[in-house]
Image 1 (cartoon, rainbow, N blue to C red):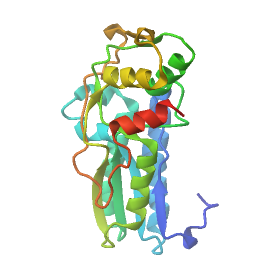
Image 2 (image 1 turned 90 degrees about the horizontal axis):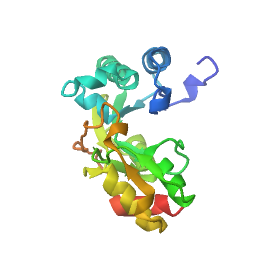
Image 3 (image 1 turned 90 degrees about the vertical axis):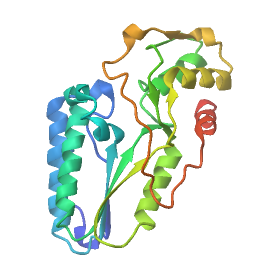
Length: 235
């Protein structure tokens, strides 16, 4: 933190999170990064009046933890929810524009190979069977370029009045994993027989779902559902 030229900044975008991917969800790291790390950042921001806006990335899971208590056992979701509530409280007295963006199911180039869409694409391209869960779980898929576009809108286009606001970054549509990977197979030109579904592989939170509702003013996805998947499948 000491190495940052805080006096030379007018906007801070906080994207760092621990536990985004299921394979890396450990309580110590999530607590240290998502709660303590964010609080350290906010403490520095509060010292510099030249910083007029701070944007923090959240997740859609935070919005539905009370309706889905199983999510409290997820260190990533639980600590991100705590961090978001802390950010909201901090913003009431910060004197700067404070924006929380709830990102939905972001996918795109460079994602971890274990991500369901990356894993499926790599398997299909290699002629290997993609061993998936039941495929019924539905997600609001948003292509990476559109997620970046939302950040740019939040950076430049929002109201200049200090205070807290929260918006969704998603398409507003729900599509199942099965529908999504089957469409990818057609784009890649792979046999659907390479997709193996088994509900026994589902994670305990497979039934948790939500579509974006409160959209960021001035932002709309460039890629619709099929266009985003086509771009991802063929590159």
